[in-house]
Image 1 (cartoon, rainbow, N blue to C red):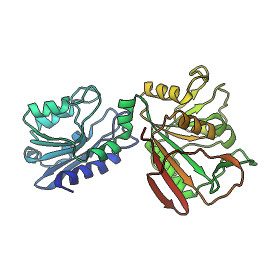
Image 2 (tube, rainbow, N blue to C red):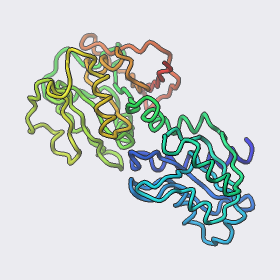
Image 3 (cartoon, one colour):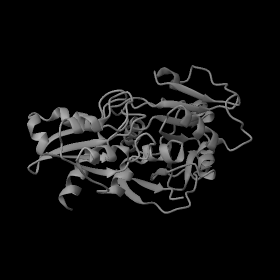
Image 4 (cartoon, rainbow, N blue to C red):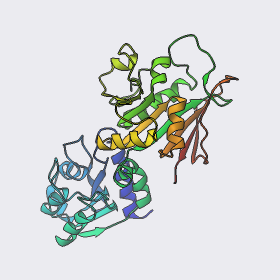
Length: 335
C-alpha cells in the first residue's frame, strides 16, 4: 500500500461514520496530511450541514499548515452551491496545494467540474486512488445516481432446512430464527439504510417493531406494501416516530412489475437506500424482477421440517462469516 492508498483508506473509514446520517448526500470521508502526519479529519454531517472536506479543514488547529498540506477525500469535492457552499471554494481559499481523490462524482452538477476548478486554481489533483474500494463504500449513492433507484438490500433469516417461517404458529409475533447477536446486527443495518420495506402479511402476522432499538441510530422510514391499504394503526410498527409510506393500489399498478414501481417511487422521494425484510412474497418479488443489489442471509441451526420456503439466490456468496452459531452469507448482484 502506497502513501496515497494509506490515507484514502483512512478516508473510507471516516466516511463509514456518516452512513445513515447524511442522506440523501453520500457519506464522504476526508483527511488532511502535513509532513506525513494527519492534522485534520472529517466526514459528511447530516443533510444541510458541512461536507467532509469542510469538517476536515475546520478541524485543523494551525490553518497556516494548510498551505503545505494534501487533502484526501473519497469522492470528488463538490463545485456547486447547494444547501452548503462549494467545497472547492474552501479548498482554494485555504490555498491547499494538493488534493487526492478516490472517485469522480457522477452527479451531473459535479461530474468533473470540481476537479477542473481545483486544477484551474493551480492545485495538483491525483485521481482514482483505491477507486474500487471507494465505489464499494459509495455504493448507495452511485446506484441512486447511475440507476435512478435506491440501493436495495434483501435480508432474511432461514432455518437450517431452508424455511423462513414455520407452517403454523400460535401468536401474532415474530418467530426468531437467528440468535440475539445476529438480530442486533440487523438493527445496525437498519440504522444505516434510509428505508425498510415489508409486505402487509409481515405486519399483520408477525407484528414487528422494525426499529433500531438494539443499536444506536435513527429508525428507518417504513414502507409497507398493502394493496388494499387495510392495516390499522394498532400494530407495533405505528408506535415508532419513523415515517410510514403505504404502497397501495392507489399508488402503483399491482398487475405490473411491483418492485420496479416501488424503486421508482422511492427514487422520486430522494430515498437512496432500502433494506427489504420480507415476507417471502415481497423478497421473491424483488429477486424475480432483479431489482436488488445485495442479499444478506442468516442461516441458523434451527430446523422447522416444513413451512414457508426461503427464497433462492442464483449466485454464490461473496462473504461468509459465523455469528455465535449463525452463518451469515452476503451475495452481490453483478447484473
